[in-house]
Image (tube, rainbow, N blue to C red; front, top):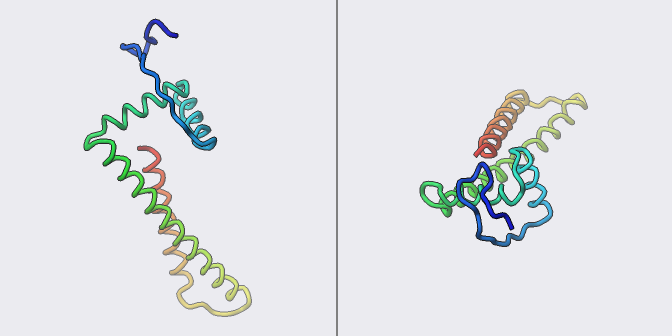
Length: 126
């Protein structure tokens, strides 16, 4: 057991807790820890403390994050349906048919995709 704090830590972390993760969750956490130069346990500890200190409390933060993720999932599903409809329009156009307002529909789907991507990037940065 470590007897002195690490250089970046002013207080020794001497309390041990067990955490259960799925394989995919652990892989994600390991990648995140590696990207900031921390060991997995230190990353988990730092992340848990950061969430616990969030203004409004961790429950508010977690519910807010989950709500945003759910909204993005719904938007992505709707976008996939719109893409399917655009594929049907493309099939008509490619067979010599005519689809009124196709350009406008494509532009709207592209704008929606860009907004969803921007929202996902913003959420990932938090």
